[in-house]
Image (tube, rainbow, N blue to C red; front, side, top):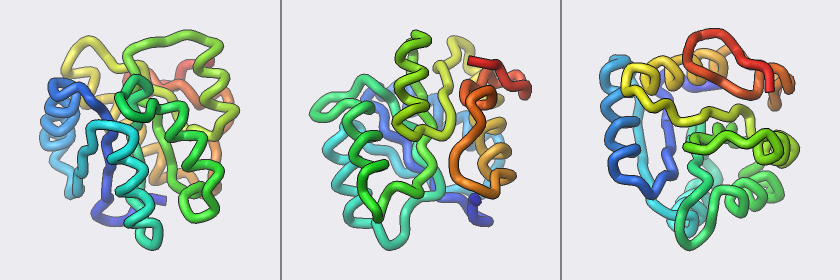
Length: 155
């Protein structure tokens, strides 16, 4: 469950995508704390340092230097101190076999990065609403892929 002022962690090596994410979050006018890291090693170091007080959610890009999103997700879900962290994959690609693998590894949701800025706002909002409503870890397979239209797309 998300706290009153959520701490959102974004792991993405693309500066433009990170800026769009921040601007979209600002436009939603949510009281939120955003921390951004730009590679997998920075991400894992930050999580180890904050293991006693983890972010409320991690938006994780798959294609990052020094450790990719798959490696980071696997490490997070295998670590007893980190595995409860909700991880939302935020990636440009969409391949069904990759989506299936990420679900099996324990990601909470999968978002294909929208090409339009207005859709970024919608999908961030949708994911935060869903996280605030989820009472138990994990998500049903049919709710795994989020599209930003405030409906859920079945994978």
